[in-house]
Length: 201
Image (cartoon, rainbow, N blue to C red; front, side, top):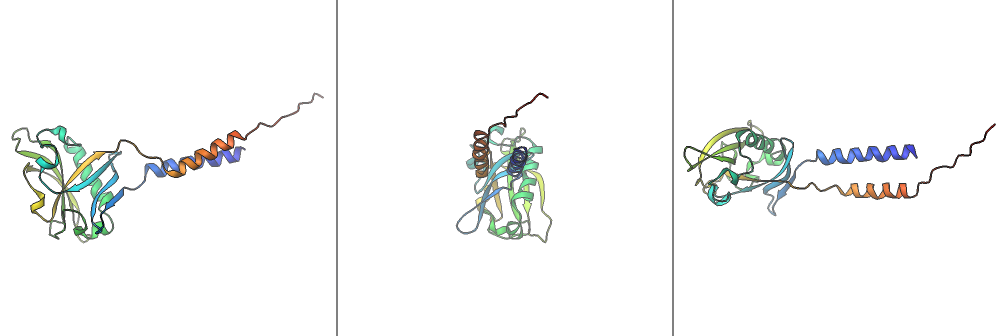
């Protein structure tokens, strides 16, 4: 019984560890274009992201308040751009920047992914952004802070797109967890402690 319980305990650890380090799930349309990803780890918190074309006003609820953005300071916005480059733009999506929605045109700058995070307090016509540059694997990817007009429309350019983020509210448990739970319940339901006869010499 002790050995069996130990095996179930180790299995539990493996399941939860694998769930916590699971890679993002890529969202790919019927043409093989990357449209976003779910479960992107940004500073230890999971977020979903979608790549969308348009301007900040139309995409971010008017783009007139920092409350319109998930990330509100430069630090988290930088972490988000870094996570895109390390977790999402990998493999074929790192090798070929034109496979990302909004970046169908190849350019020297690569695919420019914009994460807005704060309205410029000195001029509300501008928004502070962090930019991830996903270039081919022959170049060095990078991220940098900048300031854009809130009316800057990525639909007019073939190598720019916005990253629209949302925080993951719940993390679904892996299906194997339910199998484990069923097995554990069955194990203890059928467990009967051994009767030990004590004899006094």
